[in-house]
Every structure is written in C-alpha cells, then in structure tokens.
Length: 622
Image (tube, rainbow, N blue to C red):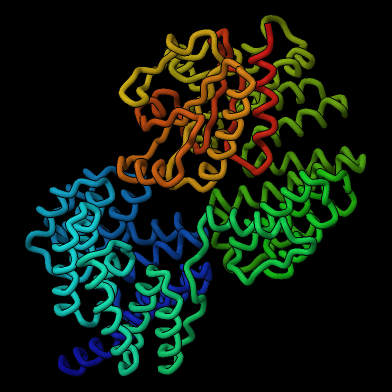
C-alpha cells in the first residue's frame, strides 16, 4: 500500500511542476485567471511544493484575490513551516513585512528561509551576504541567485564557471542559468552563453519533457533572441503544449516608443498585444491625438482597443476621453457599459468584493457616469452615483464633484462636509469651504474636525485620510496640512543637505515615488518636462523626487536607466514616513511662504497640466 502511494505521488509531481510552469507563462502573458487555475491544479497535485504556493500567490495578486488567498494560507502556515516561509517571503518582497520576519523563521524550513534571505540580499546588492547564505546551498534557485550575484559584480569568469556547473548539476532546470541567458556581457560570459544555447537547442529537439521546455522557454524570453524563442515554441507544440506569447511583455518605455510611432500614422492600427499593453498604447496615442486636435482618431482608437481587449478600465478611459470632448450622451452610454462590466456577477468579481483595487475600479465607473449625467443636467442621478463612488473608494476629485452637486442642489451643509473631506484628501478647496461654511469660527478648523470624525468611522481605518487628520500628528505638525505651514524637513542630494532652509523663498515640489510603482514611472518624466520648462523661464521652483524604495540597488538601477535631467533625485524612506506618505505617487507643493499649497495623489496621463498651472501661479505671484 505504501509503495502504491509513493508511486502515485511520484507520478503527480511532474504534473504539478508542469502546472507551475504553465502558470508562470500565463502570468507573463497576463492571462491571470488561467494562471490561477493552473496554480490551484499544482497545489492539488503537490501541496508540498513551495513554488506552487509562490505562483499561487502571484496569480491571486494578478486576479485581485490576494487578501483572500493570504488569509487562506495564513491558516495553513500555522502547521506548515514551508507555507509560513513562502507567505512571509512574499510579504517581505511586497514591502508588507520586514526582512527580520524572515530571519525569525530560520529553523522552521531552514533551506527555503536561507534562499529567501539570499534573494532579498541580492535585491539590495548585499553580495557578501548572498555568498554566505548560499555557501552550503546547492539547489536550482540557489545556483540562479549565485550566478546573478557574480554577474552583478562583474565577476564574469566565475559566473560562466558557475553556470556551466549548474547546467550539469541540474539538467532538468535550464532556468537555473537564466541570469546568464539574460546577460549581455562579453568574454567568458558570452562564450558560456553561446555554448549553453547550443545545448539548449539540441535538448529541445529531442526531449519529451514539457516541464523542461517550459522552463527553457521562460529563460529564452529573457534573452530577447526571437530565433531561440521560436525554436523552443516549436518543440512545445511538438509535445502537445500551446506556448502562447512569443516575446517579452513590453515595458513602460517600449510602450511609449510604440505609441510615439503610432502617432505618426494617419490611421494607426493597434498591434497584437496583451490587455495591459493594449490599454496603455490606446491611452498614450489617444491623449497625443487629443493634444494634436485629432479627436475623432483618438476616440476611434479607443473603439479599436475595446474590440481587442474590452475591460471596465478601458471602457472607463474611453468614457473619460468622451467627457473631455463634452460628448456627454455618448460618454454616459460608454460609462454605463463600464459599470455593467465592473459589476458583472462573475465568480472572479464575487471573489474580489473585499479587494480595494476592485472597489476603486467600480467606484471610478460610478464617478465617470456621474460626471456624464451632470453634464447632461441630470443632477439628482449624478449626485446618487458619485455618492456611491465616494462610499466605495475615497478620492478627492469624487468628493469635490459630490460637494459641487450638493451645493448646486441647495444642500449647503452637506456640501461643506464633502468639501471638507475633499480638502483633507488633497483637493484645494479653501474658497469653497468659505462659501459653504455657515457656522462660527474658522471654516478650515471646522473642515478638519469633520474630516477627522469621518476618518474614524468603521471601515475607514485603512484609508490614507486616517493619517492625514490624525489629531496627535496634527498637533505635532509632523504631517503636512493644506493651507498650513509645511513641517520642517530635510534630506540629502549627492551628500548635500536640502531642507526647508535651503529652499526658503522658492516653490518646492516634493514628489514621492518608487521604482516598482507604475504610475510613478509615468509621472516622473512628466515632472522632468515641467522642470525643464520652468528652468528655461527662470522661475524659482525646486523639484525633488524622493524615492521610498527599500532597496538601494533597485533605486540606483532605476535612476541609471531612466535619469531625470532637471529634477533632484534621492532616496529617503525616513522622510516619507515622517511626512505620512502612505500612497504612491504622492506629490506636495510648498509655496514660497513655506505653506502646503497643493497635494496630488496618484497620476493619470494629462494631469500634469494642472500641476504646471499651479506652479506657475505660485512662482509668478507677488
């Protein structure tokens, strides 16, 4: 009986590994729901495989189910050291826990914990720590980390030697030398890479193991070698697998390059792309067309994109573009479609009901529809819709719209409350507060009291507003308040101090960002362009981009790859904590008088125009 059970387990293991590799590929192609299905299959077949749990968490995050999945694994982690380690490792990687939490696990699943700590050390560029951690570790992942560490330090000869040894020791794991395939270094690395690529092609032509082919495919994608990718794909088809996307997913820079090329065409066609690529390309090109006055082409591109990759987000963006042309009727129709899709009672949506991102998606659709109804004069329905939006997800602009509609409908006291919350969330609403305040005392004090009360209501604990109106922090003046003197602050740029004294009399822009933050990567170049124009016009504005990256290595890699020419850049987690920065990107504008003038949360393409207007008004005012 025991022998039978062992044989069944051994038969299931390759199937579990195959499901893991398929899930990885599907995540790369943004087929998140299918990736989750494969991850669940992998766990059902082999719940002892740490990679199955890891890819399961990745798929959960991609589908918006991460909170629920984390809760499920938290229960399992109590009696399973491996699950505990994977879950903690994942949380540390996302910045939700400190590396100390991993170190405390050592002894529970020692080898996996060591691998996790080594991976985090490599990410931070602490190479001696990587060496110590991996000294007695000989696993595919361990070899992958070792090779990457050697390549990062420029130890090419040692890296080539380690790659050859790993290829021999783990023939079933071509992914163990992924860093070598990805490297563009010459000399011994290039020679080793060419040799292993030849061996990989030969193995691909003869193997019947789909797991090996999937692993090789993921490594091939990192090379950018289209011929090698095609070679592996043909062999995957030979063994009955469907490889899917035959290239790397386009990054932010590549998407912008494609978009610029498309704007040169009179009638551009969207290329075959993943859903996020399609949305980004359509957004970039449509905004460029709008700025060029090519409005019909911009809208036609959204229609084209929605036929390719329809989604609530894409439909909402289409509706927003229609609103900008004041085509309220068509914007309403598209926004209603977006809302219907967002609320579609599918299994995925029902599973995401407790997810913040999903709530924001639905709220955005409600707010967009409310804006369209307001434009059509349907104030009562617009007010109902935007109120729902603010209940789902608090955004400054949505509270401002709610306040405006309440004020127009004659609900002045309710409007003051909405303006107060909008102001605390970052919308500059001081004039509106004065207009709608009918009590005694200062309108701003009353507004802050209302916002403080609102933030303490049940369900508000996780919102940024909780830190924005915290009474103790407000008394200590460590967190900025709009209209109030900005707290004393200091950081360093190239080892030189920059603070409230060195910038006295100037308009100061403090932009908080991180290398992993997608909207930040969109916002920084826009800020750099504004800074260039301000500098050219001789305006006294100082721009400072403050990274909150936990990893010095990630920060340096980003600024080297995407330098900013007109903005001072530094990394300072402490400053971000001191100023209560909870969401990224967050941007504060400090006036020449030292007061907090404006706050911008998040970034949407085109929103930088409002920032530039604010800065010019401040910089040219007496």
